[in-house]
Image (cartoon, rainbow, N blue to C red; front, side, top):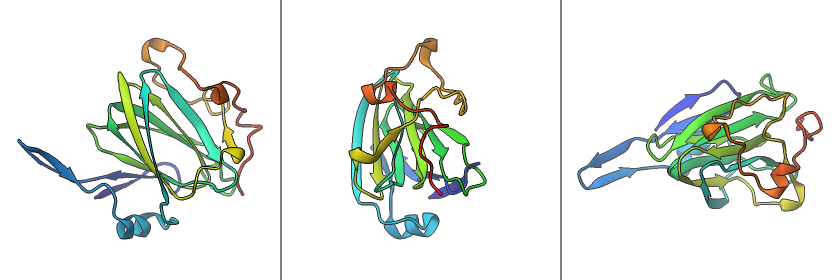
Length: 182
């Protein structure tokens, strides 16, 4: 598996080797020893799978308690995946990274603990799967506004239309007011 460092400290892109022929393909998407060696993260304990329609934006989310690292990928369609460094001690604090993840490019993004995460669906539909280092803790979840002016994320909005948001994302907090990590 190819591992690519990004402009954000500790955020990595994993590119699995795909072996294919006329019958289909095979790829290894996760191996515990290799992943731990590359990320030095806690064990992954929860798998999640979502399906969303084009124009859906989920995020930017994180948890104050049971903070989650996430290994994310797309198994159908494509998304613009975004992560924001919320670690005040990091030299990349307050910076964001956007990466296209798709069923075609097979890329996976490692989002460590201490980051907000979200994605925007660019294809007709997308199925998004991710492994987490801790369990979902809705009581401590925070949502930062997708269009926060301090972050100035360049979302590739389809036809320039506002994204479809959940109720919690509509009332998200600003980056300036969002709790951060030390």
